[in-house]
Length: 339
Length: 296
Image (cartoon, rainbow over all chains, first blue to last red; front, side, top):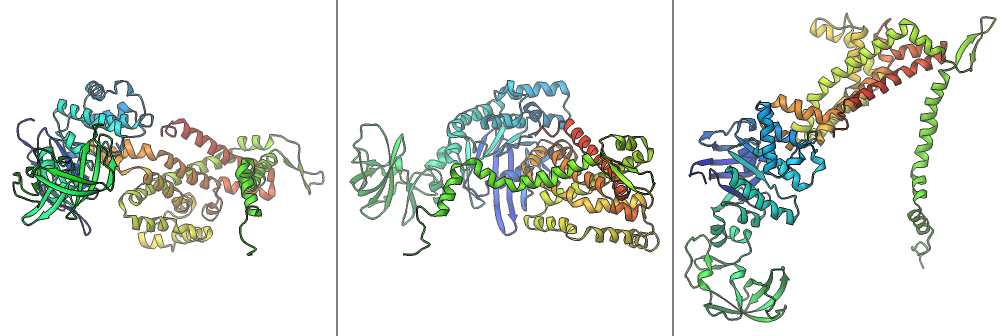
């Protein structure tokens, strides 16, 4: 990270479309040089946020500052920001090199320098030899990288990415996650990344903002978001969570922190009946109804040696009390929450 | 037992199975009607036109009766190339068709852009109806309405603005531009509708202002739509005769010349009718030669 200066500062930012409030009174600071993810289900306002920052939408209220300068009402071409679009938005009538060159040409960068920067940008996304191709002659992953090169060649202070990996198949998506992260570290540009995929957000981002109904539910590092969800929504949306109410609030424990049988260091035990079994490859997920009628999800790694548990079996479950977290409390809960 | 109960051996099933297994039968069923129409009424008429253009009319020895000589000869074509007035009429018609096309293009581009990219989905539908609505009214009614409006003495335009372009070539061009405008707006609207908003946003995002985006992104991408629209405005003007008849006075368009020769010299009228066809072929070839049609 390049110090702690703020790249993007949002204050009381709101956007309404008619009666619909898409973005609702958001305050947020994105630090220069960080890989920031905006995570949320569709309709949660994360894409509208991105469009507000890019300048495709104007805020109904509030301000957007870029490196300390108020750009709230500036048009997109006046903002030092570039965007990688969800559908890539490559110009179909221009070849790859012309697409990448477009921003430089518009800004009247000298021809020799343009050529050099285009080559450099294409090399950085490993498409050096593809300059002469048309977008429709490329695969989805290649188009994605052209879109990235076309944005990065302008050396913006902030790069916005709108679900850039959404259209790729799983294998390619995982490769691109690694590549994006590497590129971000090389160029040191602030990346703001919109996604509905919690795995993507957790694995790539330095910090994550979880969106719901136009509001931010929580901002934090992936570990904080996962281990200490601030709201029930965050607990449920980021990963799978067992959540139940107690006298002093909601409590949650992750399915992989619960064991079958009696674990030596566990201090909570319960008995239940397995209702459903989902084989997930590296793990198996079980739905269990405890003797007090509470539903619980338990996930165990597939080591190949574990005894098979089937639906209908009666099982013992155990876990550690200090792995139950009270929602909203950052400190680990030590309260008795069961029995 | 119900008589209409479907059985395995019902006649409808047998027919359906026959069609399912015989591709040629499906295609014959689908296309024989339209193909017959195309061959007889469409290509047939065109062929008759071309053949007729190679005939010529001769007055017999008495000087009263005209007979059609059906020996094939290029006499009519020599005549339309050699006689200056026929070249002038063709040139005048091309100029008018170009003017009509340019006027329609200049009007249609912003209108279609508004319809496709600015208007709400609801008003978009209304605008499409509004743009095509003049097509519901008769051609003659609209022609005479413009004649009344352009009347140099008492027309609405004279009364409102103090002066009027009047009749003649200007009146013809204005009226034709009005008549064919929907044929330009609709293809361009369709082209802009297909053009993703994200392309416009990407251009703006990369630093381009409105004019740059128009020049570098919008116009190249809707060029095929512009060509499609201009084929309508251009060819409809080339083929029109009535508007110029009620406006043009003595100056003729290709259509008037053909019309005037119908009874007097049908073979020559047929030969002259190939002129707009030749112009359109040349026009399309030049549009293709720009390479912008294959770019996409």
